[in-house]
Image (tube, rainbow, N blue to C red; front, side, top):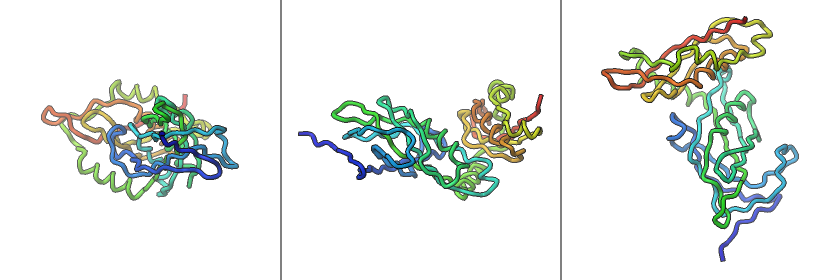
Length: 254
């Protein structure tokens, strides 16, 4: 007879797997974080309404994941932190409900939630059938590591290729995605945010960095709009190469 795994409160059975945060491409990464598969997490401050027990004998596994963007505000303040995200993996392996369980600093919450929503899994199974389960993913924001990665990118991303990377659709496509922060509007903030972007040989953005900002949410808005864009890769000797490019994003009230 097949042995089943049961979970009872307040005792929770937790499975621990190595879970990666992307170093570059969200679909092809190395593992460096811990993924805690935890069923039926209920506490006094729980607001997700988990009111059912779910059994599984095969845990979900990560297929695709995303590295969270390091918030510009956190970089400027030179701080790091951790965020624990709870999400429900549905029977198709796609996360539905995504919530912050614990955070050392709310500056990182949005970045962690955005990354968690991009994860995809093989679904958990019970008796050979897919079941929806809750899991917890911890995200670590390490400023020292981020700095080291940026230094490494400086060495392998060309600053002067024969043909620079370019945004498909031009800067107009960026401005279509740009959302003027309400705080900046209230304070009547105008000006330019300068962003350095690292574009790989496939035209994907590996990383970005604010070189000169305005604050009031403008830095994050500019970076988000750029990172939502697709690039034509740089070329050297008719071959696609990695390159870095500096882009100005103008904020002007109408």
